[in-house]
Length: 203
Image (cartoon, rainbow, N blue to C red; front, side):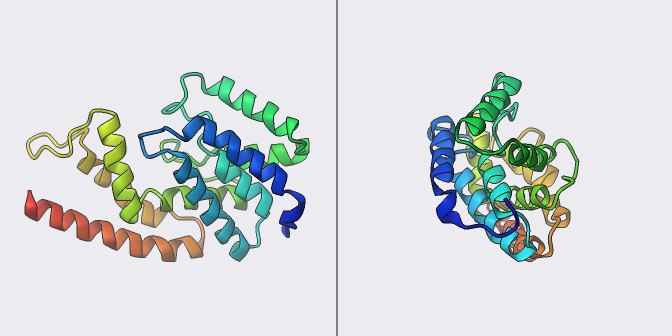
């Protein structure tokens, strides 16, 4: 698709992709809902404009980045195969599909990997930015509640929502790939630190 993009030529495809994602995540209560995908896609496209990355691959990859996540799908491989079939049905070229798959392959925090492409790095940044700051705090407790986690336990903090900040969220600021994301992450990180300080005071 190239780095520049005439959205009038792909709007039908993007609409189809948004509808495809909505059917999977509209009722999600873990913080991985449709609006998470929407925020990540919007932010990824914004960063891609600054980084001069492929806008279409970045935005589509951001919309699709949680398809096949084993936290969310009982049959991840089947979900990915179905997604590929869907992309072919809406006439996205196979080369572009390959670029999208490459972009979303290594974005998971648990995998500990850095994506190989600039589009993948941007999607990873956008996904991680949505995990921190005010929305990140809200998503943490939504996920914890959906999974039956305690908010906190000052005797045994493991597997509580508050511990998740220390295990993952407070680490993300220093794991951003792009300079643009690093600037956004700093402010959101400071907000989380302020929240945790207040939380422990009240606890």
